[in-house]
Length: 113
Length: 117
Image (tube, rainbow over all chains, first blue to last red; front, side, top):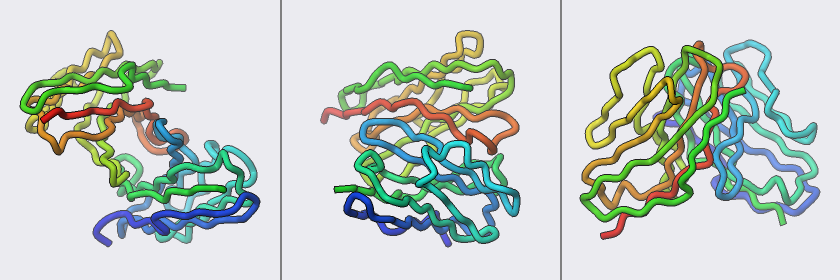
């Protein structure tokens, strides 16, 4: 596609429910990143995928968070048993090879009530 | 681990004036990249300008320029002839070289830039 696409744009969920956030990277981009942005804060790194290598999960805040990516295509970030502190904007970015410029999607605003 | 500090939570400037946003960082690496990203209300992060640490010349993109002081670990952004469309959150970011991998981009907490008409 022309840019990084994320869905849904906004998500409201009840505490304790599971949510799935989707990211469609730019076609041909081997590197994909997930970040979390809490209100009034910068971006926190969550997870990094590069091609078919094992993902770098060092930024995931707890075992309730997981992410998958099939090859060099779509990625899903799953948050299980959501908590109010999970409320944030979740941003996805992709780059051609992990060295080049990263292009960001518009994010998913998650609100846990 | 690297850290990025933006000490100005908010800045305000009159339209057509010049404004400088500050950024300092801490690293033990000698090769790296520095970036300024703009985040308008649409939430999408837009790359404004990038600087490779090995380059002594300051990067420039039209009305945007940086003052990169490697020894001082300072990387400020100057916006000349400010326009209403420049209003946004601005984030300073650091990336190791070679890039990608464990930390991706390390971001500061951002500066909210207000443009007064």
